[in-house]
Image (cartoon, rainbow, N blue to C red; front, top):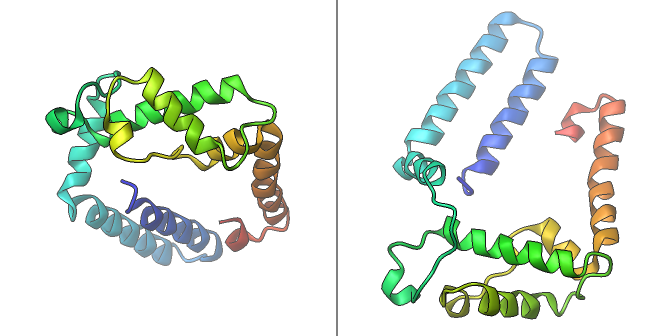
Length: 169
């Protein structure tokens, strides 16, 4: 889903902006039809999208286990991410206020992967936090996360108050 998500979001935002500023019902219907055709193309042009959604909905809730060289067919990227997010959460609970420092986060993550997860996939490849919000919190703590969120939310609030929907989107 990841590579197509920006395209999908862009289509939705264009349609939202279009529907606010276009007053003709005929134009709105044509725009909606364009969105539906685009979404159909997005979903069915790449057959693995439907397959990945099925994989995510039928996933077992366990971490990858065993030797990656022998078990790689059983270990999905979603399974690996569960382990990554598990370690993110553990580390965030251990040092929520100040974090670990920008240069130490990766070492802490790798240490957690080694100690808490029973698979060598985390040693074969280097995995970061896979989440910008967790990365900021692990690096500099909850205060830095609050500042990041405010730097996102305040411009959204200002754009909405000014009815500048293009800036908002």
